[in-house]
Length: 182
Image 1: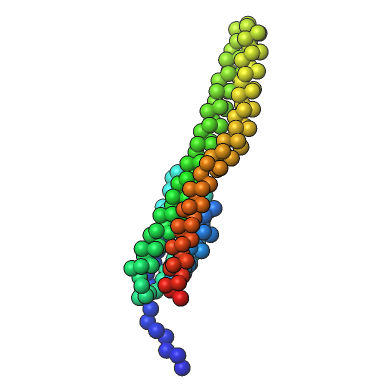
Image 2: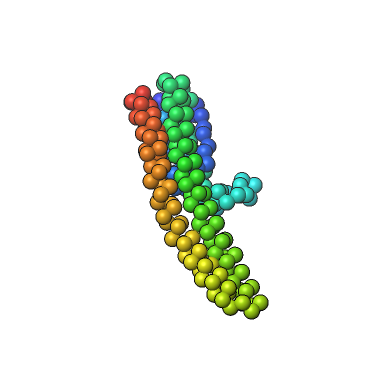
């Protein structure tokens, strides 16, 4: 008959973007963490909700692991290195999205302003200026729409090597931790 061994667990809660939750789950498993619960933001109570736009796409992950795990200091060091790399990747992606959205919104706002000036000129009785400004406004709005894809692609291409480097750092830390545990 096998006797149950006393196990004292330590717990870890992290909140991450829904798109990267799988990567965090896969990585933390290599450091001895076991996923206990996954909770999306729409399941949170109102006391736990964060009141900002980033919270909409977030997931809370709850992990546990044996407190008496071997080589805990080395595992913690590697885990910190992995989490820093994952965090750097997330910051780069967020910056890319913000830059792309800023360029698109700026062009769209300019187009809207040109349309408003064109309508004002039409009301005032300057049809030539009205047609000119409305045409420029429509072109500016169209440029904004297509710029979203072009600027986003350009930003992704510029930062892909840095993201790949950070992924390799995270992957290396996970691989070393896996070897320590097994």
